[in-house]
Image (cartoon, rainbow, N blue to C red; front, side, top):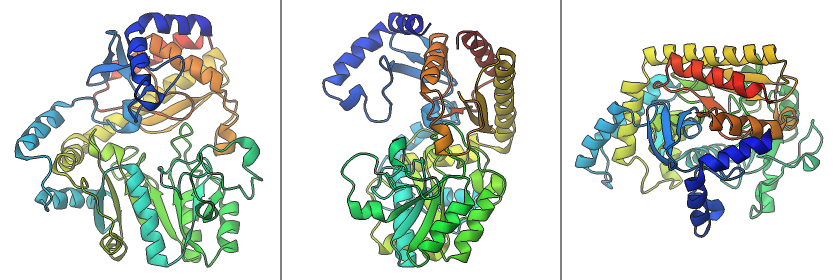
Length: 438
């Protein structure tokens, strides 16, 4: 069946194939930077609107990728489009302060347990700032990150993102494995690794390096290995351990922030970190991020010279304001939660009826399917997921007009405010058809 599906994919995306061949000549991997490569080649998008995208061959898809969770407002939301047109007339860059930065920072403060906010351009910048601030504030060098987690491309964080299983070391003391070349050994040595959902190992690491660890950085819900929620008491336990050992707790809410709840994981799980890193969904499709936390700590961004020419540019800040004040309203979250539960429930029914070896994990509007026989609680569980079946599932869904989630077993689906009950029903029906061949 896989050969048949790939053959059908090639037949319906011939123009994309030609676009890809041309792109390979000048773009590394044949993509511009934000889109992943996948077999046999990626399809190229021409336009997008609401819950739908159209490729250069004219194929229409219902989109649940939504740029890795950026577009909770859907594609080209009319409120967003109109607001950005007005801002374009006022200017895209000033090089001086503007009032909207304060307005949007106050909106973030309403949603998250923070005192001050500094804007960045991306999630990677936000987590980089967070780690630098933690080191500056504590005077300590080491950090602890979660095995298998993606926290951006800064050297200190691009470690043990997706380590080869033969290099990971024992489960009670995971090795620090650089993701690719070019990361200095000293940086690797200062990044300690612990498994997700394992407080015992975290406690051992913190106690061994008691006077050396500046911060623990964690995605409250892991979202680059499917969706892996925290087990009951895990985040509360992290908060307790870090406080006991005088270590800062950083929530990387680049993917969870304003997605799983209005105030992200801080609100949903009721845990207050010291620093919150934000990006993606807060910008509604434009590049923006933020690092936020206690006032004294966040003031350090100026002392450390953490500035950016494009940080807080008026166009992105206005997109953030529109997203937070006009699109992601209380009513929107009620609808998103309902549709998210509908989609997960529909998938679980199909899995049960078809006796598939798969699990569905998610939180509200964010979820995904993992082809394995048990719940996935950390990176090492995820390595047992059937990646070949995940590819087969994804291509088969796309061939039937549904981009079910980000490609492969690494990512998740997202539901936007522009998706409808009928979209969800269509998604489930397509999955029923595809499941027959898995």
